[in-house]
Image 1 (tube, one colour):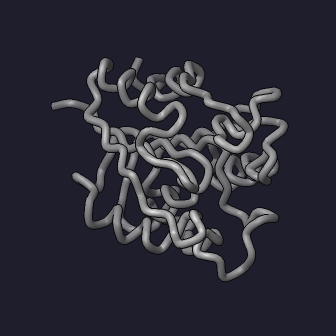
Image 2 (cartoon, rainbow, N blue to C red):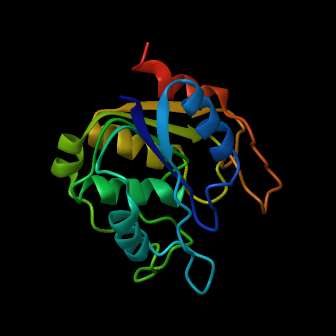
Length: 188
């Protein structure tokens, strides 16, 4: 039986955003069955975390994964999944957030809520958070530090890597070897 993985994009993204297709291919070459859903944006092009949660519950091939990876708002989404019956042996967040970021007003559909920390800790066995020291949207090292402390995980801080993929910043980020290494770390 193959190992299972899920990869979640961020706001305005899809299964074809940035490093996701590359990572999916690399994981498949390493024996994973990979689910990469494209989740809908709201009328403003933003993540609607409530819609994403319901869509993922309906569309997920299963609720137990060997690996879950997420980017940006996908990290908040992934943590909500772990709060709602999903499980993963290895959980990796890239440029994510769980605390409100400056550009997200309270009540916005992408405002981070709905987390049960104790349930997340039980549902996810190993946590890794990858952040850059110059993320332009508040998905910064402070967010990574908060998640590392909350979930007793590992924080990896990169220098000058922005958001690890951004259309508006012209940061294509089509490959991500460091992320792949962390995805396979538990496998070796």
